[in-house]
Image 1 (tube, one colour):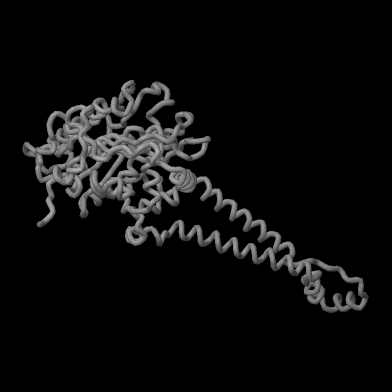
Image 2 (cartoon, rainbow, N blue to C red; image 1 turned 180 degrees about the vertical axis):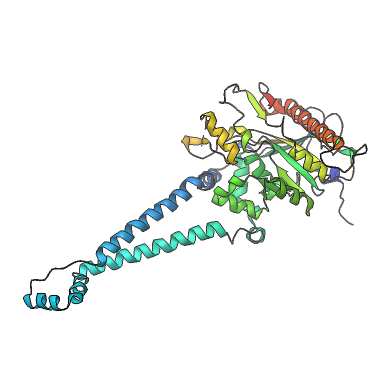
Length: 424
């Protein structure tokens, strides 16, 4: 018998709890606190220092190797030729007769010790230069950054990701509301159908988006696999860049995202607030510690692409994503530069002031799927027409309302009853 494609039957493992509000189901329950063992914590701490801290040690390491290469090269040059002075009169006469012989003799190493030092420094300089060139070339060309390489390595099934998901208490819930909104399109299967998955908020580091698409355990029984849309700035994080390429990551440029929306399987995940959203929280002036922010008010690009490619949007709010790291409030011009160059110029810290995230439970709550409004009027199919812009605004408003709804309905479950969500 062929397996059923009915989404409701696929999620037969979901659990209903009597204390939850009607219409909310738990797809993946939180693991017990003690599920995160000491070995898990060590893996999390080590990989966080390696991955999140990679811009510091990687580029710092390149600078260190370059300076050591220059140092040994100069030392080798200093020992290469040592000027020696002879007191032999006959030699002096010969030198006057043949001046080139004088310079040749002065160019000879003075003794065995000098020769050995020269050879040693030259060898060290050569090794460092080779290592430096290899690291830079591999970093730029990246022959290992291929989706097939990630599949061959089985990256999505690594035990490392279980340690991370235990550390963050990975939980997934579905909020249908008073009725199952997905019945508008009964053929829509959240695990296989073309769709956009919008994860709110971005957080100082996008853990919410990362854990939703990288570990197989994160997407297998929830929303299915998809390609993550990432900022160009992630190329500055060497290991992050590699992991993203293994997942088939998509650059956040409009053309790249549009191309991904038109290519099989037409499933992408995006954090619409982007880098700018990480600055829209406390300690920014005007924000209270109990404020959560979603940068959506003037962002319509995602909805234009959804309408253009006829893709539904699945809203997902990730409770706890903003608390994994804390940041220092820098002068406003730093935020301006970050938005201008699309790079996160942010001073963040975690445990012990290091780039190790605080242990914070991540609770994903999926809202009701937002389907593209049906086109009406004479301008059907024309981009930027009045009818198209109206449908974009309708989809945008529906998405913002849905994010606010699932936040307000589920914040008590997370222990955030005192918090408020600001759409900015």
